[in-house]
Length: 227
Image (cartoon, rainbow, N blue to C red; front, side, top):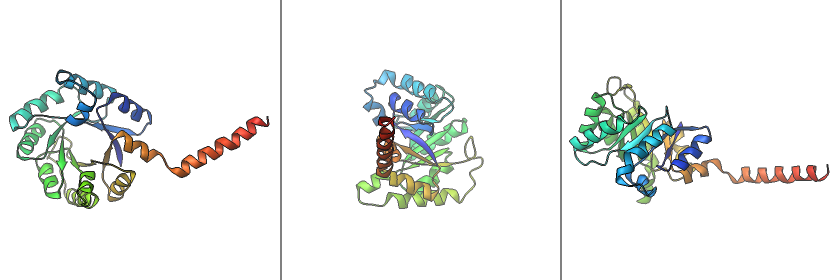
């Protein structure tokens, strides 16, 4: 399973990329707002991310609410850099825009997916990536991992050749809160997990690793002291 980072923060992206295991970036209006970015700087900021992650897919989300607006903004975003993927919400307008963008050879990440039915519609509309949310189900005491499993199974049942520019659909596990979400998604065969920096760092850490490192350092200090 590939790791994307879910952020619009350039420093976080650079740090995660430096670990050598980053395969892409996803952003959304909320994440951009957290950087303190201004409206006029949105597209230049997406371009900065795309250049920082050259060769890796970077999802930039349209903020339009109607089909024509999504198509227009999507084409503009896709023209910024070859690795930018247009992110659209799964809704009537989003599905129609997805089809138009896919027909124009533009990769689309369909987001805010909460059911297998929505995922199937998105794939048929030409989505290159589908982002089912996990953590938000937990927020309402429902099982997001189970819903993710349904999406993976349904999408995996079919050949999506001819539906989008690459002829394949990848599942991006989104709204990831914990390392357990990552592990469960991988066990189910999700293609990608997009993870915020805080959760990504939790995936790196383990108390037994910390204990082992402390022990090694203490033992080596004794060796140095006796030299």
